[in-house]
Length: 245
Ligand SMILES: Nc1nc2c(ncn2[C@@H]2O[C@H](COP(=O)(O)OP(=O)(O)O)[C@@H](O)[C@H]2O)c(=O)[nH]1
Ligand SMILES: [Mg+2]
Image 1: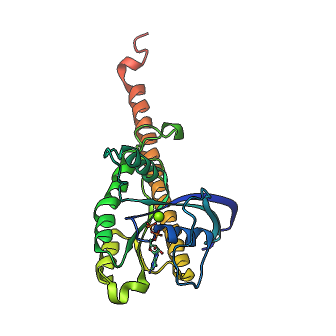
Image 2: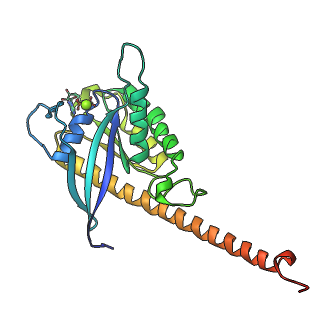
Image 3: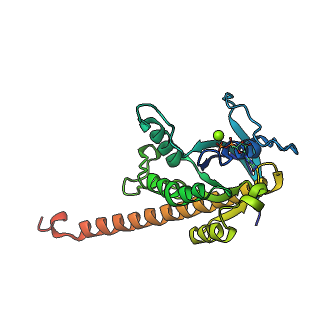
């Protein structure tokens, strides 16, 4: 059933993958709708600090999407210290609501890395979240909407797949199915598949937030019941009465 809500919900989305898989092109196309029929794919100014934000309505709900692309390829630095970048990634993993796991269909290692390594890093980062300012009881380690995250898998550079494919569709689809996430194959110059992928991501975020909220409700209910049992026990305990007076 469609619900209609005038308020806008903000969602922060990470586009994640190895270097050169097409993250920046995807992010620009998805956020600024810079679709073009040109043969050139990269269509962005890397020095621009412009935020990639856009509005989108899904199932009658208006969302403001903030998209950011992050490379999972560690920057090469002379002294080998990439700690600052790891920290940046970890914060992004902890605070986003949705993730686009992006790889290039022409690069097997980009598929292996995002599915075997980076996906797990996101899950592990979120398991450590504790957010006192949300005022959830400390027993609830995972605030609603933050334990789970929305997710899709995207195989990019479909236009090159005819001759250069290194990842079979069945292999990527099977991995996505095993995780319960949707899989898309596309290239970053066609609008419709990117729009479809973004809508699927938002629906996945909606599910993640719903399930987290249900968990939270159940936990709170359990705690209320335990508190009620505790105070009932206290009231009937002989030392807690003024017996004999
Ligand atoms: N053929 C093809 N090239 C693409 C596609 N998407 C991006 N590219 C090219 O791949 C290169 C890397 O793209 P970029 O978005 O900068 O990748 P990033 O390093 O993951 O951010 C650039 O030369 C793009 O023009 C695509 O769908 N098909
Ligand atoms: Mg880039």
